[in-house]
Length: 100
Image 1 (cartoon, rainbow, N blue to C red):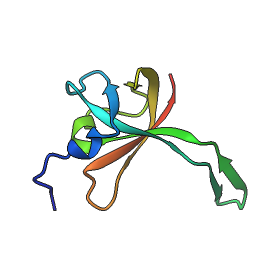
Image 2: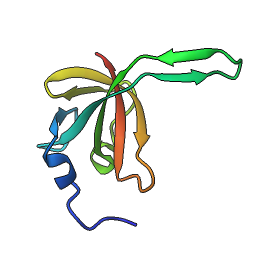
Image 3: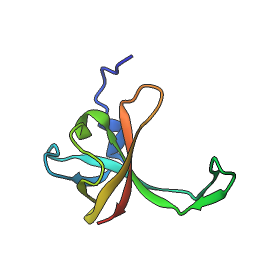
Image 4: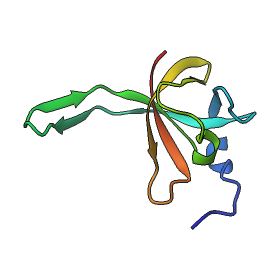
């Protein structure tokens, strides 16, 4: 079910400026640091991932943004490492950021 409300209000209080080629003017997102994660590979090897910077944006605003594309979040340059639509409705997407 789609929301009729302006979803920008969810980002307004904690939002930081975000820009990339083709980004809407005045785009803001919520920056965060995802914690370390311990996982097990199919071979049974335990892997620990380091904390990763992320930014959450409205999915519609980043439809053209792809993996390895350049992005600036709060004045710092990054590249997009992964895109994960937030469940269950997909109106927000979390981008994993890597060093530019």
